[in-house]
Image (cartoon, helix red, strand yellow):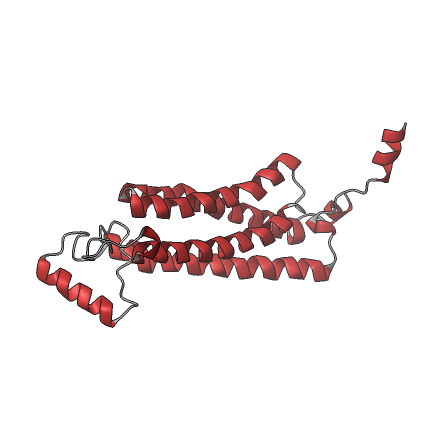
Length: 208
């Protein structure tokens, strides 16, 4: 009897179609802003990683000594030309350093650590906002739960791939594909579903 009373006092979870116009406007601009961020990240990957790796005239890791010395000199004069775009690069700061440094002081460790915390904060914030939108979708609880969790798993796989690629084998580069695929597909599903529920459904849908 008491359980029935408790259930009777529980209000139905609101859906996106039931939100007022200002709330729908907020959800819309959040999704569009995050979409622009995702497109910018994809563009950065293409320009900084994919093109230098697969379309450069010089194969990765095949520089002769003179070219290596010129490249090293250009890096010292221009920090922006660090060559990080080569996904299969076998370059190691330890190989160019005559004195062995502690791991936490090496250039490679510091760079990956900076990359990690920036991406952890940036990507996770995107999917915190998207997760809040996901729980308002009019789909099953199980589907919403997976759509909330999977992007964070994808981010973790993507970050892990960077460390494995840097310290074990460049073959771990391919982990970026399932990692990025997880959060990219989840983002697309939530975005399309959210717009459909807010603007593309029948009028009486919001009353359900």
